[in-house]
Image (tube, rainbow, N blue to C red; front, side, top):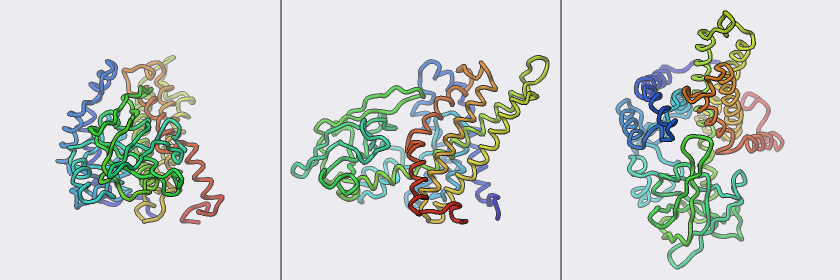
Length: 390
């Protein structure tokens, strides 16, 4: 059994690391300073400039099909790259991407929504979560009522990433309440902001914030239906499922960077006449963190590998997200403890990570939902203990 990376995987991973180190990390101190002033760490124009620099490095559209100018990388390589992105606390991501369910668009919709999004000319967001429908996505209430050739949308979505900046939204609405959400009663719509929906900023404990989206008699032409009528919930689950190995991949990079800071600090900080790294309490925190990071690494890579095999990745991805999100919270907490009072200040990124990574246990499937998926798979015989090696 070979656990090493191929030459291609190592070369691409190392190039991504070089880009993050040379082009993104030098911006970190300025970003922290801005955030202490309650300003965005990175303006949208600066993000776009970085993405164009990354394009010159060869990184554009990691998961985007080659026919649209992307790299169409295997899941394992995408995981490795997202880990490198996680090493910096700058809110950066490579450009040339679009929501995976936008590829279900027809040709006219692709020209209007998909291609401009890939090229960075448009910003999208995806909206299924509602005030009364978070983990229970099947409980959505936002309605779409047929009126001639149009549909009229009424209701509210909440905690929508990119909702404050997006110029169009992919929104899942109830179109046939009698069929129910899981029975084909929902449909996805592509809705331009100019059609009348509005966004309201939601302040959170992290930097930036999601949005509430309000639809008050928003009229949408039938040509803006994404996919088929009744396919909305299915598309929503495809959108949510995509990130379940990428989120812990990003968490892995954060944990590695944070642990590296803790090791450096433990080797230099002195108390009572000796370096704190000589204390068993500090050594055990470092050791536990390393073990958890390595355990998470192989769960994450196995989940990505499962995607590349063309197998159903839900069980492996749920385990990776559950453990990876818990791991990074534990590691960052220990790193803050090792740094003491300095770790609690905003002079270092540790307290920022502390707030940021807490979200990883909630969004795109809470810890509790991952446990539900994992346990049901086993109890109903959908998978075996030991997975593909069983």
